[in-house]
Image (cartoon, rainbow, N blue to C red; front, side, top):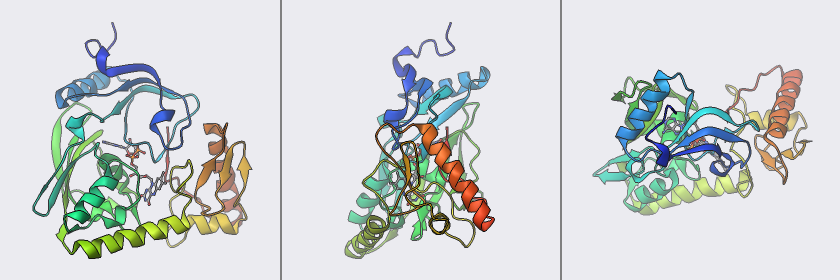
Length: 292
Ligand SMILES: Cc1cc2nc3c(=O)[nH]c(=O)nc-3n(C[C@H](O)[C@H](O)[C@H](O)COP(=O)(O)OP(=O)(O)OC[C@H]3O[C@@H](n4cnc5c(N)ncnc54)[C@H](O)[C@@H]3O)c2cc1C
């Protein structure tokens, strides 16, 4: 009997993940699971834990590279309405992990609530953005998140709030498996001024990043005080190609894919960049994207 018996209607076996990621690459998950209720999610998480089955949570797949061999074990997708709802109450936004961050940025701006503008153009879910402390030169989501509701591997649900909740560069100290919800503290502001700020962030990104391509945002984290993109550029790697994977000419920290590209092409190009940058500048580039 399958460990997921009784949940057949929310489980796809041997499910290709490429359609769920921005890169559009890679193989299948043994099980893709779409819980419809928190209780279902709890039971699934518990069964995986009891049976020592690897479990991952997939957001909008905008920071992931799935291997060509796919992913063993279970992958959760919190796409049901239960996990995507959001509500504004005065200055506070309570957002489900599956909610679309970009839509919430615009909704907040329309309501004259500031704080999320730095997340303009980041194509992720609220859960993924919290996990990655998504942001950039204009700020990051961690600065406005007051608390999160999470579920651990045993299915226990609890809240973690600041000051125990600590965000750092592209990371947060959440060890629980699943982020369910975030409470975001916004500030009353003039909608026109906020809209102007959103436009500025958007124009900056449009001018500096290859946004109209298949990619997963920045591949590497910026080493302290340095720009990963600038190092890759100075190593002469713009336009370097392995199979169907190419270093962007517009922003060297982006790897683009051409038709027929395999996940392994991107991985090999990542290794090549790391080796060359290390050789030339003695800097070890750390990945910002996750390899599954
Ligand atoms: C064109 C483009 C531009 C980008 N620009 C930026 C940028 O400016 N700044 C920036 O920081 N990032 C950027 N990114 C990367 C990416 O959008 C962010 O990291 C985003 O926050 C990832 O969210 P996601 O929902 O897609 O997460 P995924 O990519 O699906 O997952 C990322 C990680 O979050 C975890 N995760 C997702 N949901 C949950 C959950 N509910 N509970 C627990 N863990 C979860 C996953 O397990 C994984 O570890 C960009 C990506 C693209 C494609």
